[in-house]
Image (cartoon, rainbow, N blue to C red):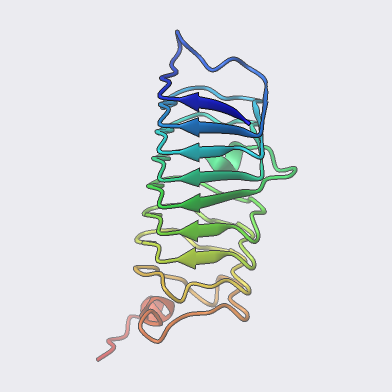
Length: 184
């Protein structure tokens, strides 16, 4: 495994273009960096800042983000083939996964405020203790998802596939919010 620790990348000192396999990026700053067409295979990002990083046609295969700042990353522009990423304790406000097939993804202890999941296949994904405030779910496949410990979401069952998804009694209010009813 190759290690990149405490590195700061920008337009002057950029991460060399290429394919990164079995690499660990720890405490690296990659905010606003253009990673267009890079390939990351079996890599981990730990304590990294990737705010507004550009990922157009970027390949993420078996990649994990742990305690990372991913604000504004447009994962909807990443390469579809082999897209497999898991997130733990990440700040992911205003990210986009529009029209992505990311089934079986794990979001654990993440802040997913204002994330766009429009027309996303999230089937069999896990949202464990995630804040989904103002997250957009429309024409989203949430079948077999586990949202039982997540909170602040609003999901219209008429506009999304929630077949066999798991919810707790406490968070069911997020499934009826569109009805404009009061739950007492």
